Length: 278
Image (cartoon, rainbow, N blue to C red; front, side, top):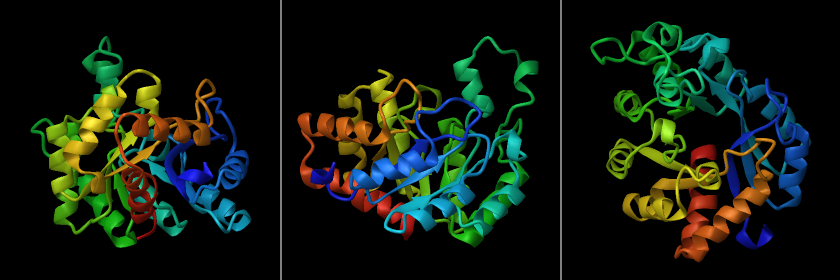
């Protein structure tokens, strides 16, 4: 990996988790340090990772390591206090609901009834207006300078939140794995998100699992602009490659299909570093 420079992967799932993972935090840090990475972000759907990242930084001072919190029910859902706690712990990312987003479950499990979906998380009321607690969360994100990531909510909800975030002066925003079928953003929606100040994330998981093609990803990169995108793996699944292997595969596919080394540098170094450290 050293031939690609000091790159980042801002979307990795590690153990401890409520499900089996490819490796634990320490194993990941050792692998990525040996592979010459600049840094990485650990994500967990059901518990904060800010404290875990903080401990890793003590052991690996040459790596930029970050964590955050996903606003699912185990942390109180749309809970500004969970966001504040993440900020106090030195966290970086706040993901809107992921596995427990109501819109995500509607796509993944269309057989679920309205009553079955009711306990899960939506950002909007029956009039498609953002809930008051969403604004509370945005205010905390702004006060701590955190990164707002759209998680698994629908593009419709995500764009509403990005607009509200921009109005509150939030400048660090990410559209999470825009290629994922469950929270898919069209190229036009990606362009709209960029105009609001967001960076678009394209994850190798979608390509690896044949949910998107490499040509689709490149089309989005060309349309949206290489300065507005970073790539990640979203790996950590037991049956996926290790994240360093995944990043190498993703980069090779992008190069083979027409991207330049300069563009790869933007996608893997400059843009993720800007999101993570500025």
